Image 1: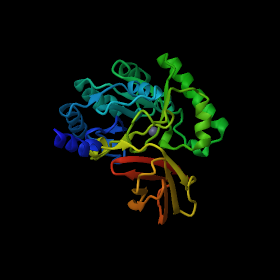
Image 2: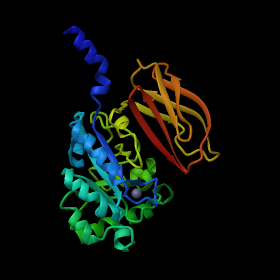
Image 3: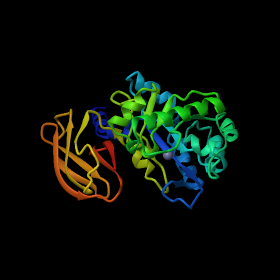
Length: 316
Ligand SMILES: [Zn+2]
């Protein structure tokens, strides 16, 4: 018995892995490989959830646990789709219906309102909302980090008003375009009293330490390592100290992170284009002299302790 207990204890980080939120974009649209998921891959993922007793629940169920500071059950999964591409309606939705999986579709309202070819119509959204919820992903899908407070507010107001007009709905949940945000943008969005706000950083949702206005979602595009993602737990008590703004010379010099848990001695630091690097932790402090060159206009910095993970984004 004691041996079994020890065995379970050793396995426990892997057995108990928090809740997870995934994000999809397009389905069976091979023109855009970085945002596409084939329906055969989607079926493979859904079949895995089903065979391994994952409970796919409405996103709001996870939000409510987070708001109550309660632990999100380990096998809980919520599925989200961003932008409102027509291929969700034509190719993705039938599979969600077949499995009876709820979902939350975050729409960038302008694409629907202006009848962009690749996007769902208001009529289709009405039908979609019979099977899942439709929430808000900005009006114009702009880079909020590069827009003034007034422009961000105007964008949000316009999108919300159109959703009210066409769907008779006041959205509760919000997603930044490109998963880009910073403290200034967050403050503007905070004024709207959304129940929760989501990013697009790989991670997990513990519930007890999750910031309801910065909830991690892992993107499932192409052949995503979804089984690995399902084993991630949220790393609580992380404060990113440096860098806090995008490095304009495109070199990440020193990464500084503090961890509340002073018993941690080893961690890994992630920098976009550079993968994971092992680092030592001294009394909760990581100082990593990286000097790593980055290429993207939007980079992620992350920290991982075994399978516990937390990422953040810096954009130009
Ligand atoms: Zn988007």
